[in-house]
Image 1 (tube, rainbow, N blue to C red):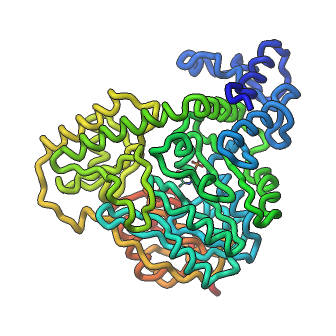
Image 2 (cartoon, rainbow, N blue to C red):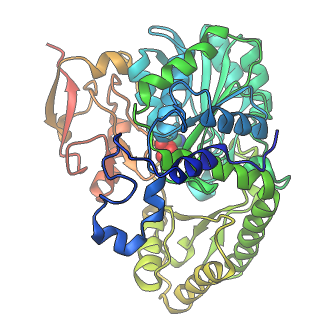
Image 3 (tube, helix red, strand yellow):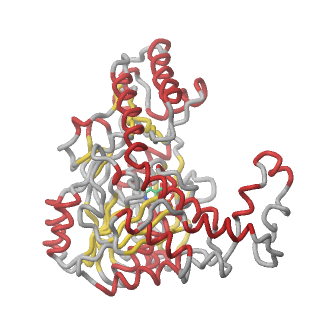
Amino acid sequence: MDQNRTPLLEAITDFIETKPAYFRIPGHRMAKGISKRWTDKVGTDIFAYDVTETPATDDLHSPEGAISEAQELLRELYGADKSFFLVNGSTCGNEAMIMSAALEGEKIMIARNAHKSAMMGLIISGAEPVYVMPGVIGQWGIQGGITAKEVRKCFAENPDCKALFLVSPSYYGVCSELEEISKVCHAYGALLLVDEAHGGHVYFHAGLPQGALEAGADMCVQSMHKVTGALTQSSVLHLKYHGINQEAYDRAAQNLHLVQSTSPNYLLMTSLDCARYELALHGTDMMSKALRLAEQTRNQINAISGFQCMASDEIGRAGVHELDGTRLVISAKELGLTGFELDALLFEKYAVNVELSDYQNVLAIVTYANDEADMDRLADACRSISETYVRRKTDSGRALLPEFPMLPQQVMTPRKAYFSKTKMIRWEDAVDKISGQMIAPYPPGIPAIYPGERISRQVWEYVERFRKDGRHMHGTDKDGKLEKIKIIDEL
Ligand SMILES: Cc1ncc(COP(=O)(O)O)c(C=O)c1O
């Protein structure tokens, strides 16, 4: 196929050039109706591409023209059997994968470090989750990968699981041993579903981890907006047939209708078309640049007193099979700084913005679109902090992430809990109650409690540590402070 083409961009451009008298949605009429306050800042050209389904611009929900061609090019580039544009982020892709693979009452194995969108998929599908725990990279206080050994053990106990859903790479760039894991899944007639939200770029350079599709995954989603140049919310779903559960593959396309808007945004879809084009033509150069920038900064940071940047020596521990070298996990714990404090210093004093922070680290995501100047600012800021920050006696208890709790007892499925009668109680009284909601301390936004789980003392204490420290809680009452919690009304 001709990867030099951008069918959707071309179709919309041709359409605009006909200078249509436009009586469709959106009502701004190709920029004329957009607030001048905004167009004065950003210009008008881009808004002309904010169109809708027309005979010339195709229909995402029933593609036959430009969108179909653009998806075909994407499919070919990634070596999938079928690929879909997503306009509601990887969130909707994860929901669709789970709904497709496991029906109500069927079992599905879920890595416990899954993003909360997996839980949303469970609520919609009604499937029964069985959890598999990732390792913990002790020195960095972050979750590691899932091993084939753990997966095999979990399938031996639950051979009726229809699929395994896991995240690889994780936010921190940790990849699990997908190739071995896919063999285990397929031996049990189960699908491997990979949340590759952070991995759309790994296919384009030998120095990056193996992609999920290359490793035998049956379905995977990628947030093309995270690192590959598409606009925020633009993601993709790929399917690869391995002769397992044909019905699930067929359901995937149908399920996308349920979780996506009926008015998909053409700017987002065009951004996917163009991101694919750039990757196809220049992917290796783009990724070489990102890897080079990240590697040189990692070395510089590791030479700064009191700073450390995670490196490949973690591979082989805690289920870490590979690491994405474009992610910089940076710690200044030797200076007595938590990741939260380092994040605040970088932002407030040096205008250096990192993606996230935790009790110990900050995470900087490096892409091909960064430049030497960005990297220098990051390294210089770390140097300056090291020189000026008065070294505190490390209070290791303070700097470490609370230990991940044991799995709580699952009393009912997330779906059953979500649609059960609930009541609000004070958080202090929540031990031993069945949660009616998820609680995901943010970051990293991974649920510590799923709806339907009994809140053990250990889980309560884990969450309480985040709450006391004023961390934001996803899934809680309006201000994210967790003063109250929704529990199942057992009467
Ligand atoms: C691991 C993981 N999966 C899925 C998502 C959701 O992706 P999106 O923002 O594209 O909906 C995120 C978002 O950060 C994520 O980190």
